[in-house]
Image (tube, rainbow, N blue to C red; front, side):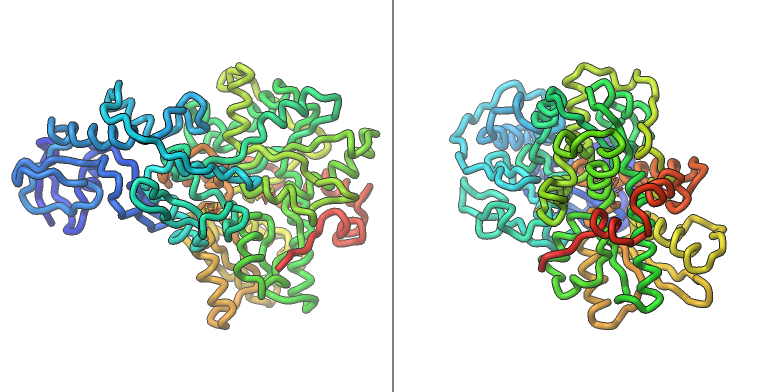
Length: 573
Ligand code: HC1
Ligand code: SF4
């Protein structure tokens, strides 16, 4: 053990611990910008490029960047000495000297870590007013906006994209003053291998990476004479409250419905209903493949970041993902057929808005494969953050709102639909239904705890009848690459694999309130998701009475011709 003092407090920590980690252990916070410790996901951004976390060692009389300096015996660290604070201020003043002065209109206004540190340090003027970069802004994709002028070279996004996700769409480019993190060959993001998972923007401390906002389009639709309906993804309800100061994981379903009604949506529905529908189709596909009608393993297909990754990087496996559309796309297809018939309106007079924790859903909604009779299943996608901004814009006091219920008939859901929002949940929901279909017996223990949590690759074996069924979950794209390479080489054999592009699943999506690398927030959101499941009377998708009614009155057979036309898709290599 190494013994040292931090701000006068004796500390004893293991060799190799950094000064920053040692300080955090005794609850002393040191500001950082580039540092990112993704604990359970096991990645650290170690570049120490920003130098904001400077501290002074009174023993040696030296200043050190605390995130990159291991503790030494006898150090006398002061995190707030005059020299340390002055060094930190100078670093931040230099960062501000060439940073665009557009805080008031920046998408990250009030959520920017550079802004917060400047505020916390009481910086009121920038002594080194310098030249500004005038690099082109890339807003050409449907999901992601990249403003290199706001890049402070912390390179968290690079660590996320290249090391955690193994996509490799981002790299440091340019020279000297013009150095910034850009895209491969400086192309527009939609021309790169970017999957639009949005993990880079989840950790970007400034407004250099943000989502494409559809808020204005949604307002315009709400003020039109069309019927505007909205659906909310499973993971939105456990994170939206954070945007209003509530604790991560607080389930705000009822308040969210009330807020959506106040915003003027004509009908408010639940993507969880469509998640149940997905399970009925996907579990059937799994059962059929287990009976020998098709290839195993079946791969889940609801995550659009994963579908992009699969099409680009695992195109040789294009025949094994489930052909099921994602739940929100199934919802759109059912809304523009079944619901329009019920409401006696034309599909072209209906606008379907999805509130999603994900920015890849914006890209997904525009896919030509997800059109029916020339119209997109889903017209507009906004993120959890964008919904919060609409609620704020409308002057609604979210925390004070009473609860309301989703509308009928696409508002009813089971616990299985709810758990889609956390890594492992989709396959757990699939197994709950597939087990009962295959055995004709009731599944007694519904929770598959081996498939839950933030571990990168999870697996379990389930006895279904006389068969040992091997299930795996890949949590994040880097883990997906590892797992699929093993499956391809024959080193591993599974019957079903769930893939979610974002670490944590949808609860950690790129459209959620920024977690800035604090992974404990994801754990709390997951707890919220599992509490929704736990508190439901019905916890298996095939028991959802509204789904049963949908098949009886409209779709016909599971996987029948109408279900195929509306609920299934194909992939492009
Ligand atoms: Fe997801 Fe899904 S779970 S993909 O993470 O299958 O975005 O929440 O809506 O469509 O249901 C996201 C979440 C979401 C779909 C469902
Ligand atoms: Fe990489 Fe995902 Fe960001 Fe695209 S959205 S650059 S794939 S981290």
